[in-house]
Length: 140
Image (cartoon, rainbow, N blue to C red):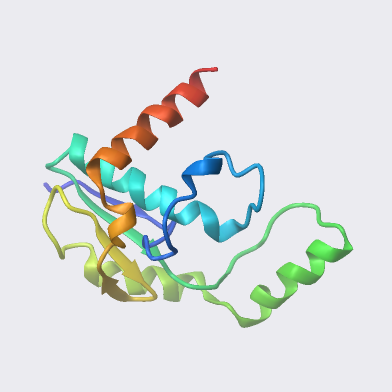
């Protein structure tokens, strides 16, 4: 049996990780975390080379957007609620690519199509550094 990780956190095509602000205390936007997610995928498969890993960005998906929102946030989430694709569609796009690629190298998928990882997110040395930093922060 093959082990596959399917991560709906992003496909590693959102630009370089902002290493000057790893905790995103300034200029934080929901998409700026995606390069970190891709880098951690590179680290994960480097540590677990027998595991296949799909890092998926399905585009805008209609989810429940659970939580309490103020008026401005309500306006922001109403657009994706109206224009996003159903969760079922996003999941179906990911399935055909689960068996693609090779163990030890993440497969990046954006809206149903395989894409190469951006070079700035695929350095194993940088990915290991981010992993070590993440563990340090979580241990505090």
